[in-house]
Length: 43
Image (cartoon, rainbow, N blue to C red; front, side, top):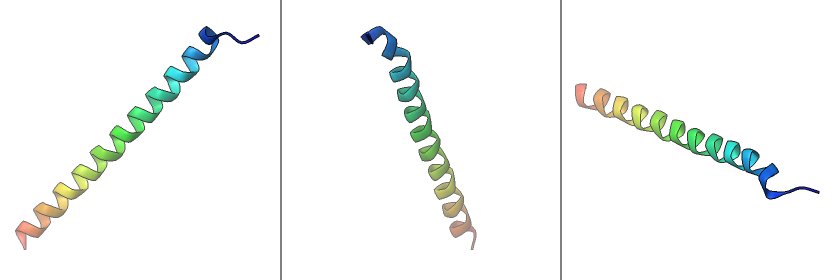
C-alpha cells in the first residue's frame, strides 16, 4: 500500500505553498501599512 515516502513530496509541497502564501500575505500587508503611514504623514 502507501508508504510514508510516497507522501513526503506532497507534504513538502503543501508546506511550501502554505509558507510562501503566508509570507506573501504579510509582505503585502506590511507594504500597505507603510503606504498608509506615508500618506498620513504627508497630509
